Image (cartoon, rainbow, N blue to C red; front, side, top):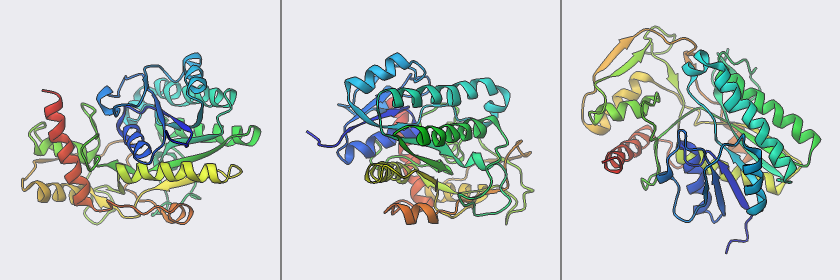
Length: 333
């Protein structure tokens, strides 16, 4: 039996949440997952981890889980994440991401859960005036997705000032890759993440990859992003949990990225290299709300946590994503 307290992971059957569950269980933390399985997958939950199928807005269900499992920390991943959809359907995003987060935070306060880790995003910065982006850059979201996450950050700050709870908000850059042991990965059908789309194309699941905009002020004209391996990101969550428990008086707001950007064309060249194939690229117009470059200044997280990324290599990220995509084909047969 572990002497560590139980962690509630919301959205633990989803892409990033399932990797956090693996990182926690690998490190000996007891975990319970709440997921409504609207976008998550039961197969992503490891054997022995309880999965309660419920919506995080259902406070009675969530509080029953918190009390039954004596939960002492929440890792909150449940939410909607597709930027263009948030523009088309803002009320969905303010409900799933903001209203439901408010309910979850209230449940944590009611049940005396002292630590809260929140899955935030670089989208809270909007179109940054500088690159790389540090945590002190203005947060001016340009879409409802980013705003819904920023509102949750604001709620956490206010609640932590009023109640005995501390929190860490981790602002993700572009999450990619899959568990190195192929236990989980990006499984969503119709995903919009570039590396996921590219490996699907390499395996014949898509006919081509769209390149949205070649006229940005970047070295090759295509958008530049900071790609972070999902397992390195999951490891940062475990370190955040340890930091919150070590100093309950302190909160953290930290970027999660490698501080290095790759353009769309550089990523596609790398996928061609890793797969030894040539993926068809179709040049299309820019998408609304896409900044030219999003690269993290990651000095704060490196200074705050003993975080040592293990997979900060684009070819490795792609190789892991490819291995998972192949396994997913088998799972779905």
